[in-house]
Image (tube, rainbow, N blue to C red; front, side, top):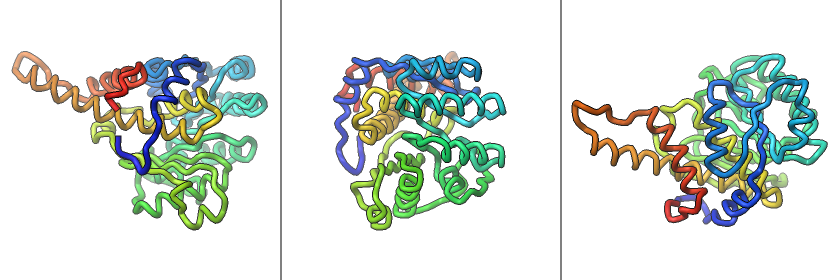
Length: 291
């Protein structure tokens, strides 16, 4: 595992295993099954309720709330509002994934109204999505990154978002940037105490729909398991996913050599998705040497 500073993974995994937090996911319909499976893999318990009529009851018994705006509708947004209010009332950690926020005014208006009403614990998006929220603008590449920035610019953007919304901000990409709650001086100085970079993963992660959605579920599970150190929990979840991405690709390469003949189909992106979930399972099951 390669990061700007060493992360104590074992403690977070032990807390995750011992607590087995119940996570309420109102997530992307394209990837709902994968989100549930990766939370099960890490030791959490997912619930995927979506009807506004049961939001208070369901959210109230959960340990974490994962909101993903990837497949929006009026009913789903209303469910998210109700769930977020209940989570805020009961001090249940909230993760907000800004999937495609700059694609439409519908998404942007919802996110801005939600952030005005409740404080979320973790805001997550790629560079284009976080930039769109900060500037109330568009990102024309759908859910893909359309903007580029060097490391200092990405760190500064993450830190400004954390400062504005009182949240931990995660900017995902080839390198993930995580900004904790920081004061104004830290924000402008780009202090290393306030922003961490997490490297690793594998290019195959971009060939599977939903790795970002799965990551949000993983973040929510880690944070729910250790609310006393949310920043550490977020960085641990990111590191777990990056490590799993690399391990899944290595396993595929090994398997591909074994089946490289006209009688077998070599593993591709569908196999990679399964191996990614398997890798998270083994990392969180105590195979720390994999890290």
